[in-house]
Image 1 (cartoon, rainbow, N blue to C red):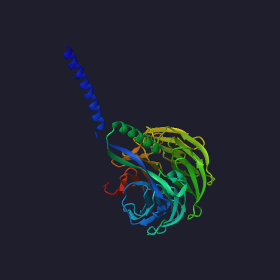
Image 2: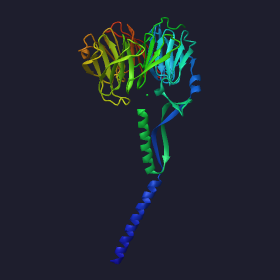
Image 3: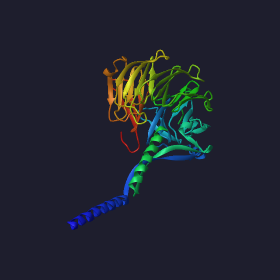
Image 4: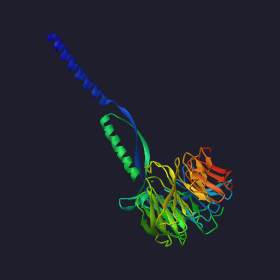
Length: 425
């Protein structure tokens, strides 16, 4: 009996000891983990300034905003620069040159002067000769939310955060857990913190996703929080003027007559720019949190709301608003959509980009029956934004630039395509 009890006691001790050994071995096991980290990318101001140059035509890689002026098309290569394309024949566009502009996201043109952002600066180019583009003006530190000065010096600035995938071997499971939590917190913090030139002296035309807009002798730009006014009465010498706080989540700007319609993640702001030096706030139409470009024709404003990580919303719809009284816009009708992005209107025809769901074309003569008048749906294309030009349409997406002839809305025809490098459209 005693022997049995002694054997049982030794067995229990052995099991306990084995348990400790297993735990110890578990702590010592080498594990491979993969995670995403956002690392700051710094740039010298001297590097930023010297990087601007004109180079040979390049293929589209990551196209963004589009802009058209006379027979020329300008396509933003996200954070890299601007493609200049001769579009005199929409059926056969010709690449002319590429302006290398670090941190570029937006474009606007008046006369022969092209305005663009370069991280924290505004830059102006003379494009009289698209093969010999010349930098004529730089306005320093005018877009502080596009970068950040470091250590109170103008010599270095934080340009962006770059996503990197890290794979490493670790031994301590508990430390791995805490590291993962720190990485997640850091990521969340960052996500909260985005030939001959044109002959006429007027401005060109941008898409609904634009953050740059020209009205008369003034350039208006929007950041996440502000409306910045520039006097461009002397095209080659833009002068920064009034800065107006708009709140948070500002996304787009659309000029129409003497009004500025500004889209945000929470609503649409209407400003009267009868006094272009200092636009006056008229009203704000609020909606659920969602991405929000806007275009206007007559007394109607057309707003798309879409879900997406940057917008933190779940709504996908088209809204029609009566803006005949700009101080009191009224919602008239809501239409469910798939994932609407940019949009454009021309003579009662609505062109609506649905992201990966393609491009939709509607007859909107009766704005209360838009859903009953779908004229065309071009699937299999990733549509981001459009610019209607009377009889031809420019459409940009992740897979390239498309041009369509819509002179007959019942028989819309593809004119040409410029695919993203390495892809066929």
